[in-house]
Image (cartoon, rainbow, N blue to C red):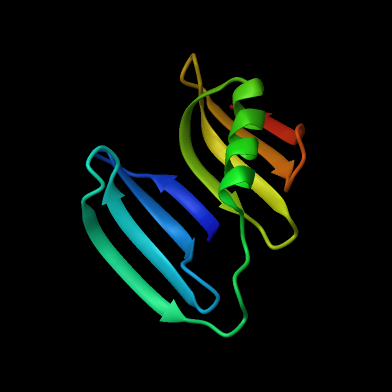
Length: 112
């Protein structure tokens, strides 16, 4: 229901951390192409779900692409409603874009 972190891993794998429902938080690693599950861990929490909705993930990615991101590596939600997207531009240079939940523009862009 809510995503805290999405990270691209080696060999076409992705790791997701977030909430399954109102009380279960999970971390899973799966194959990007097939969806095959490699690892799953769950823990019951009583502080309720928080993080990004699917729409908020998509909006943050659109902001990053508008700033030149061509390859995604990681997207992370911070408790202060900031979303950090890390990746690379077309030339392969590192790019980090920070936006705020629900906003359609970058607050900060760092290029290496």
